[in-house]
Image (cartoon, rainbow over the protein chains, first blue to last red):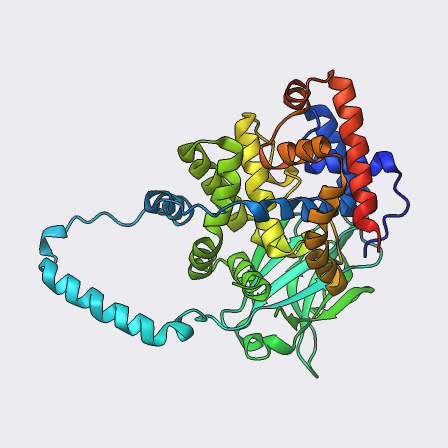
Length: 230
Length: 180
């Protein structure tokens, strides 16, 4: 488990109060800053959140209304296109029969339908000489990568951190210089998609603008093979 | 839906997979609404808070892996904190100031996940070992979103006394949870 032995009882109580939202706004922002700077304190807050969430087990589930679901989906994905041609729609009974057929088809094929997009892979990179952790989520089928870094602290002056994808027995391919973002998305080059599940991801230290040669020129700061998430 | 399926759905949300988000919503929203409803005591406000929580979940799904949480804990913590912010009409400068979304553990590790499952079971036992009024205060703070001022009124204690004895209760709870 997390080594939080260095924390005093006061620290632990403070972490609990923070997790319980009992702190006044000023104390809470101090605790939030401490969470970023002090990994042991952060782990203690997480442990409290985890333990306390068991209290929610006792709550009886409450089904949300269809309207709330619709409103949420519209907010996240944008509203459905307006039905200007509504009068061109087939009569209701055709709709009902179609719906019944679809329901049967969904029932028959549901197990496949629930897994339409293939496996998800992840890798975590902890570069030496940089104070962040980069977590990469990758979906080989679509070639989409989601990247999250734990802090946006800048690299040493005049240097950047560059991300590489390395297929087995192949040279590293640059996926670009890391932006100073918390989170961003990338698409894998087409020729790497087929081998996405066996990629190693690496970070190297490079001059401003990234490697001038197309291959890593500075120190390799971290490397990790992607692993299937589950 | 089990832990692995939920994690898979959250990973897919990080990759902007709409179908995964809808499945995740259908599998978890009744629990998250229950959490919001307990805090806000009004279905319309609770549904609004629940929607805000799912927007955060969609937006920050990529952060899930770095928090060291099990999927249900992560979802419940976001829902609870969102509902409490609404109760107190508080807005964070940015979502990631929300403790539920803070990046905590760079390496949760599989052992941390195992501990998570057992400690959830342990909590009930440890709560029972607390003096009943302290356990009630912890529940009131977590489930109902009570502030120290509200707890002090409820338990007829001066504010500072309330804080001192609840903190003592929390330390006792932590000691009990760490035993064995």
